[in-house]
Image (tube, helix red, strand yellow):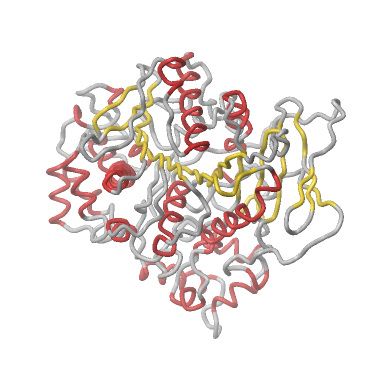
Length: 567
């Protein structure tokens, strides 16, 4: 697993958990009848929206269901169940869990809809399903930064209303425990299967809320975007008709982490079972299931075990190495938006990179099957030239001092490409070669919380298409993204939000609003003969650029996606 520095920010739950609800208009609480029974939600007069919060989509994964594939709900009821409060977040390890209740019992989702969604003469609304990131070790669907009320409100204002959903899935060892015993049990990658079961629940039930099960867009960032990519690839590209389009921010169908670390995870599993005295049981996995939550949580919540777990090839939901599978064309053919930020690598590069030898040692440590010969090729394709490196905001000759090091920009450029940008480019190329719709982008704006040395780093684009102009969910110690920023930042958020809304509604970017409303050019589809991406920028007018920068380095990375990087 790659290191995390600013992957996700600390959260303190604010009073604004959802937009204000108000019953002073005598609006009756909204209700929906799904297959299991009837739910009562909340109405917001302020936003003219309905909220259905904390809806279970699976049986609680506790007791004997711990470390097992999620089980569908198997009960029905008479009367009405409340859906008026968020569930707990899943157990995780990192700043994104701070300020939120956490629990093993966490497989719930939340629905935000315009209040008239089920009163439109039978017409059903397109559905956006948000899958959060956090390195598969932290994050949740109740994180206030991912409040979908703002994009739903904007969709209504555009005359292209949509319905939004956030969901939880199991994290860390709870969701991605790996070992031969786990493989033999058939309960692999259960966090990914949680997401999949939620999508099946949405397919079966979303019409009751006014949503169209045939117009679902899955959408995520970082590990959430990688998860979206994994659903495009799941079961060797089997199309279960769970979504009709996909949006991936800093992630792609080609994995962002090694998918074949059997020996590494077997050792980690042995450490976990030893630390819990389960290693001498006939079934260590059953022993782990029987442990009290507090004891198992304490064992996982250590430096070596909390943040290492990630999806791995299991021959089933993760059928094969993604870079091979996608090259062979085994993926669900849907329209996509896929992009990365300009300075992804500043969140993942080591510091103290003073010279080429230190950079080379970092390269050798950057992938499990890296070797001296390939590292030398990386050095050649990522030369020591600040004018060709990321953090362009610092100028073409700037070299950082301590603690970063004179060649920090060189290293951060490589790390960003190796993890995110090369994968994004290869995805765009494959979609174009398959005559599929792909809108590709680079995000190049620095929000208020980021420093000049962060640049347009990982995660900076999240608040923009979500139109979180108020900075809801950002903690007091972290400056809200738009605070003190010029109007151009708000305009950029509006542009991105409207692009995303159009795409969720149609699987396309209609482009009519871009020149008239924002003074920017059309966003072209990616073409084999014209590989172009749109650059979302707030300091200059956003523009279209050729997607050919650092071509030799990214070709090298993509050529070795499986053999060196294990993707």
